[in-house]
Length: 349
Ligand SMILES: C[S@@+](CC[C@H](N)C(=O)[O-])C[C@H]1O[C@@H](n2cnc3c(N)ncnc32)[C@H](O)[C@@H]1O
Image (cartoon, rainbow, N blue to C red; front, top):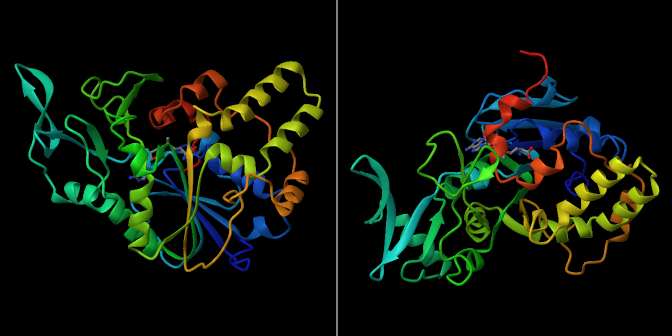
C-alpha cells in the first residue's frame, strides 16, 4: 500500500478498536523487516474508545494512542485498519411478524427481562433490506448495524488518499441474511471466554457481538467515495500472501518440539476452514484507482513479487504476548473484556 501510494512520509496507519495493541505490535515488528525506509515513514495510531494501555505498557517505536469513538483525523495518507472492530458495534435486531418487518425490544415481565417484537424504531432498518434487495422470511431474525453510514462518512473525511483494510467475521448480505443458513441471526454473547448466547444475562459484563454485513459496509463506503478493492476469506487472503511457504520454512527451523507444534498449530489455525480461516478481509480505497492489492487476486497462486518478499522476511513466531492456543480457539470478541488482565506492564502515563 505504501508503494502504491508513492511512498508517502508519513504513511499513517490508524487502527480502529486497537484494544491492547497486540495486532499493532505484530505489524510494527514486521514492518522493520520490510524494504528500507518503510518503518521510518510509518506512523501508527492505536485508536480505541477505551483509554487502555498497550500491552506491556510500552508503545513500540512510531506508535501513538488515541482514545476516541470516532476517527478524529483529517488529510491522512495511509491505511485505516481494524480487526474485530465492526462486530462490536451495537445492532438492532429485527424479525418478520405476520409479514411485517418488526424490531425486537427488551422489556420486563414480572421482574424478568424478555423480548417482544414491535414497530421499527427507525425506518432505516426497512431501507437497509430494500437497499440490499433482500426480504427476510416470517420468523427469521437478523441484526442490522445502522452506524455504518456515519462510520463511512467519518472514514472518508479522515482519509485523503489510501486504504481501509477490515478483518472480521461476517459475510456478504445474501449469506448473512439467508433464511436457510442463519434463521436465528448471528447475535451471540461471550462470558468469561465461553459463548453462552444469552444477551439478557450478565448485563454489562459480557461481550455481545454480531457478524458483520460486508455488503452494507461496502455500500456505505461507496456512498462516500470509498470503493471496494478486494474481498476474500482470511484463509484465501493469507494463502495468496504466501502462507504455505511460511509453513514450509517453519518446518525447516528445527524449533524445540513444543514450540514447533504451537507455531504450526498457530499458523494452521489462522487459515482453518470453519474457524479463523472463514474470517473475511475487505480492502477499500479512496482516491486510489485501478490498484491491485496483494492477497485478493482471482487465482490462488502467489504473486512472484509477494513470494520474493515472503522468502526474505523471518518466519513470524509466537511470542509471550500472543494468546495461548486454547484461549485463541475460543476467541469471539471477548478480548474486549480482558484488557485489564493483559496490562501487565508498568504505567507509562
Ligand atoms: C476485540 S478488540 C480488537 C483488538 C485488536 N484489534 C487486535 O486485533 O488485537 C475490539 C476493540 O474495539 C473497541 N471498540 C469497539 N467499538 C468501538 C468504537 N465504536 N470506537 C472505538 N473503539 C471501539 C473495543 O474497546 C475493543 O478494544
